[in-house]
Image 1: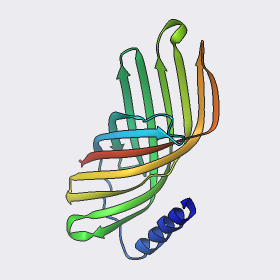
Image 2: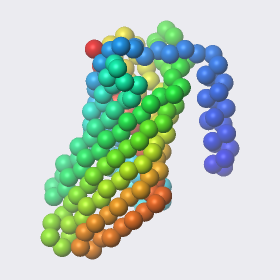
Image 3: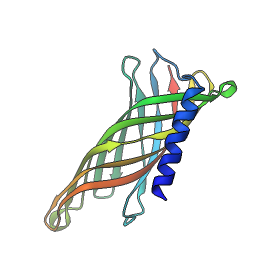
Image 4: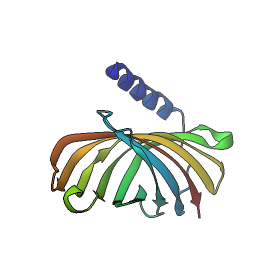
Amino acid sequence: MKKILLVSVLACVVVFGLFAEDGRPSGRWGLGFVASRSSSWSAMDAGYWEVGLSLKAPQSPIFWGISLDLRESAFGLGITGDHYFIERVLIKEVNFGWFVGVGGYGNFWSSGSGDSSATFLGLGARLPVGVYIMPVDFFEGFLNIAPNVGLELGFGKNVDTFRFPAGRFGVELGARFWL
């Protein structure tokens, strides 16, 4: 089943890539917010929603995401950077398009205190695939899935974790203003 899905997605990427053109602005800053949720491949955790910033500098091809997770007795910080190697318009009238990219992520998360404290570090690669719409030239809405694979380290009094490969499946929903 997974192979059929992968072949179908790749076929769509090739076919749609033959008939479309880029639709996002170049030479402008993109600044916005993104809500993301991820869960592990093993579905042992249900995941949680995080809110972060979305940034695109005009000189760089990288779309950045920066998230901060503040909870009672917990702190998390995450960063993503994606380069879209395919970005095409599907409906020109509303500038509705899709993209496929490759990127990386890094995150830090710490919780608890004393004997129950734990710290986790993660680093890896991701594959964002999604859609966007720009009904006006300064506003963009986007939705993407971003499966990832990487390395996870855990430290603490009762935690000693090394996982490779450690994978997660992410969903991101956001808005970006182009200045």
